[in-house]
Image (tube, rainbow, N blue to C red; front, side):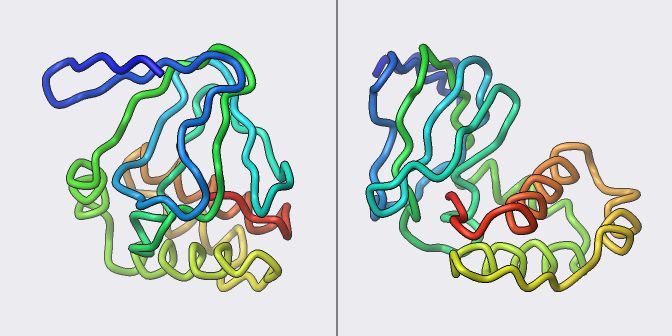
Length: 154
């Protein structure tokens, strides 16, 4: 793993098969995939692939919990680290209603075997209408994970 620092931003480069973090590790940041792809491993089983443009690691920050999965580079990968403080700043710009929805979606996702949707897609789209693009993408990604998997990744 190679880490480069640019002011308050850190760029992380991983080689194929290199571990980013283990299930059970402290969640101190989230990551945005700038290039490459990664495997998500839960309880020793591969449950998902993550690709360029995806944000992950947010559940540990939102729920204030340890990592729910291990993440390993599938190919050469470049990540942008989003610190807990920076992530909190992004979330502080979100309406209280959306914060509650994101929290509840993450709680359901963390159960791993739940597919209970607290909101339907149309209601979610209305709620996201005036939110910033980063939070909109994050919320849609969490919603997608919940609706399409029972092996919910980090």
